[in-house]
Image (cartoon, rainbow, N blue to C red; front, side):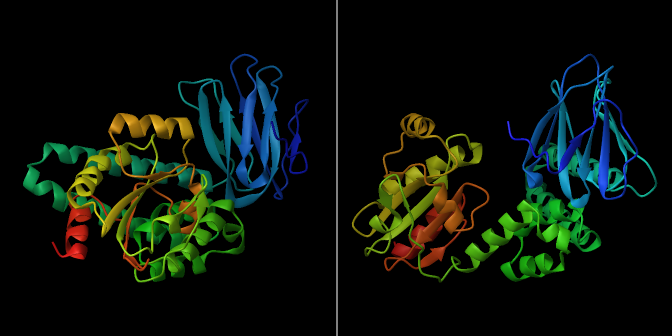
Length: 339
């Protein structure tokens, strides 16, 4: 267990008032179960031992940073906003309260409630006539994107804006995403989530459609063993645990069986997955096209932050199409091969 003691002072004997430079989180728990506190941006993962059902921790304030506290099976997230926070684990669900008005943590809870309501509306689409579902789904998606963009603009240097931008940027054009990242303040820019997203955006800029392929090596193989050798190659970045990936596999197998030959091939690139699990999925799904295993480096090179991500490479290695799904896979291959 990693302990960032340089950023966290464990105050077990008593909880003193917190200056603005620090955020004091005070916990109430049932019994003597420890409270685990994690702050990814501070490399902090530590346990607090309660006394008389109470524990507390003081953390460096940064409104762009989120912390997670867990007691037993309950967990709650909170922003290090420079206010004293009270977190109660004794009820059915953890409850958080913050001193003062206009709390960022209260605003975060409002955002969560909005997302929950939007998700319920999306789930409810299944009750509509089939011919109305697509239009309503597009309307909900447009509402979501517009809301997240507005949230970033209204919260450029706190976690609420960071969270909205990390969620939505991959749905935007590269230029629009870049403009939103430029709006972020210094606290937000330093967070790991933003740094990772900016790196992924940079990778996308150099691996977009029309760009030459970027080689990588994993499991003793290179992408260039397959791509840029005179044939069209459909590359599926996937993982065994990914439900949408598994549902896309039959489409890919169908395209492979229909068009495989000297001018076309399919390659699977397993990312964020354990070797044994990938091999088991290959067998159970009946995949016969070649694979590169344990190839998370490939996702990094191509700025992929969600899977499946399916790319069609031209015979010379040029990236012809990105992010193909469903029927678009077969249509893109058929058009490329002129069949």
